[in-house]
Image (tube, rainbow, N blue to C red; front, side, top):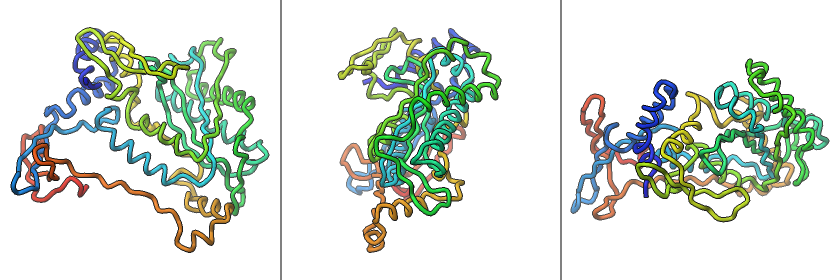
Amino acid sequence: MPSVADCLRQHAPAYLEKFGERVPVGHRKVIGAITRCRTGELGGVIYQCVDRDCGREHWVGRSCGNRHCPTCQIDKAAAWLEKQTSRLLPVHHFLVTFTVPQEVRMMLRANQRDGYNGLFAAGRDTIRDVAGSTRSLRGCQLGFFGVLHTWGRDPTVYHPHVHFVVPGGGVSEDGTKWMATPENFLLHHGTAVKVYKAKFADAMRAAGLYDQVPKKAWRGKWVVDIKPVGDGKSVLKYLAPYVYRVAISDKRILACDDKSVTFRYTPTGAMQAKPRPVTGPEFVRGFVQHVLPRGFQKVRYVGWMSSNSRLGLDDVRWLVWLFLGWTYWLASGHAPQPKRTVREPPRCAECGSAMRIVGVLHINCRVLVEHSVAYLDSG
């Protein structure tokens, strides 16, 4: 089956030639990295089978490591999911999603850094402010995190929105106890919508973008979705693949020829996936429109979930245990231990034994650097 890189190799040159200097430098760099990934153009790694009876050598092209590459980011997505699952508190959670009307999307696409920052800030401040007027959370210190998405079911459609994963509760103002919300209620929906629209307008004014928003957008429907999601594990599994890749994975590509690309997607409201053919230029345009500005953080932590908070996540976890009455049980040595996945070394294609790295070819200097016993699983 073809991959995203195969589709870009086939159609990106014509796309770049057609649009020339109108294609941002960042988009060009991403296309260049993905199309050269593991082809040998970036260098290579030489592995040798550790079985003395075999001892065969295998040459593998080096990965590009670009954060938009579907091939390179698989392991990082799994590591992020494992880490975030271990950080979950033993409480109920909510998924709060903030999006923008259709009329606002093109403005965000043309002003991604300021627009996405405003989207994050408006959603974050809405949760904080509306929670402050909610009975169960009044005066509480909150902690949550958000993930930016710029696509929906169809990756060729631009649909920017932010998902916030919010634990169902907060820490009392004096920092001494956990205050839980009802399992089916976090914020008043109508209030959240009004506050969010006002916060987003303030953010656009601060960024000098307010006049670029069509006036009818402010009169239209704004969407804030607040959904209870149990312990939060299923939401993390949903978010993880989107944290370290862009729009579409290799496994969704069904066909690629000199004119078109066909991928699999599930239409809104449907239960079954269907093929969607698009022209080559449309596929490239649909992919690169989701490329993020350089250095942009698409995952952001708020309150006691952030690394610079004076109230640490471990402190909050202890307060939750006190609230649940688990402290005696945990002090007896029953505290849950996070699972750690051990990365398996690559296997020899001939005999199936483990392999070790014996050389790295750096394409920039054409120097073969020898490594004696540098096994891949050593880091």
